[in-house]
Length: 300
Length: 267
Image (cartoon, rainbow over all chains, first blue to last red; front, top):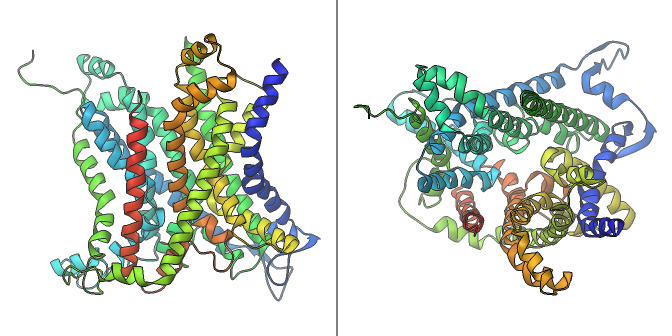
């Protein structure tokens, strides 16, 4: 009987798993294999084992003096920019998302739904279109520059496209709802009597925020941060449209190896590096959350 | 009662930041929509109201072509994903822990964790290999890729619905001598419909939005609306793009609003 019901489960779940293994998880293993092969002539790979792709991820050989090995400054600059911009995006989203989520959570119940809906709609509308909307704002002949010129604040348009600033603005814009929603979920469950107790005990607003509210909504903060950080690290569309070739992120560097660059093993190795960063971030997140709940269990 | 009302829920400046955030979220989109109705070519100077960019978009056979492809791909992929996700949700909820459960969850949620660019190039490699081996270069690859990507999104609301469902109803059906199949068809399935519809809609929206995976999986002549737009953005942008984006936004808005209504009306 027991075994019979298990078999049932596997029969029901297997079509979904088959599709996922064929069209999502399985191909990742091929990427891992490809990163240890040699590049083919016209894209693709040659089936010779090689660690050259992994070597090239971090190092560069001089063309004329192959024994002269230096760090690959171009790649390292892209890694650094990717991590730095993703961290900045997370901080900006948290700084804007926390007050926003708090504001929504403290509205009367009927209006809360409308606010939540207004935050959710941009989240489900096309990321490319939202990036395009930002492009229209910050182009040299875009809305922002035209408005500033008309007001006489600036004499000539500020160059904003294809800079780190443009990418940062775009990513903060597109990923912001991912921070607000988990923060709101945490605040929705907040027991406001604790906040009241803080004030009754003569805590200032800042002290209440620091010692009562923040510790209670910390899980929402952590979840929101990971939800913003992971898509930022793997961003492709936003840096491609707003950053162009000048402000490239890891996703674009990977994409290039399968387009004009045509070095599939290098692209595969870079993709594995990106995957490792994501996994490290996820493990970090899981360790924080299990430590949090583990600590609480220990106390009780 | 204190003479001066003290609101424990208020924090100074938070309201202002919230309003600022909301305005910032919508301002670029609203400007994009406004300039889709602009008579002049400019994206910054208003030249009077006109629908000419919409007319231009509808007369652009390429735009129609990629839009139709996007829509049927989203319908097919979300449809298949919803069926598969429903079966998977039935197998994995309300059953307690069982061996292999963690692996199943990991596989289902994998498309949510792995960056799209990594999945995209992985599929590019795999599809390139299959094309050489089989000679087939049709839309099947795109359907499979989109379906896999939609499964976790379709799975979430269906599973949520199953978990909050009243189990006594099924037990009552069994008490009244319904066979398991009858209990499922007449009790569980009708109760599950809102979850299934919500799952389908999420899958539909996600498939419609997917750019990166499509960009790397598509063969020549298999552009969808997002990849077409991505290609156009590199060239000079005309308000025709705004018109297309506005129509696209309107479609997303309708689906998301319906989704919101369905999931809120928990009875």
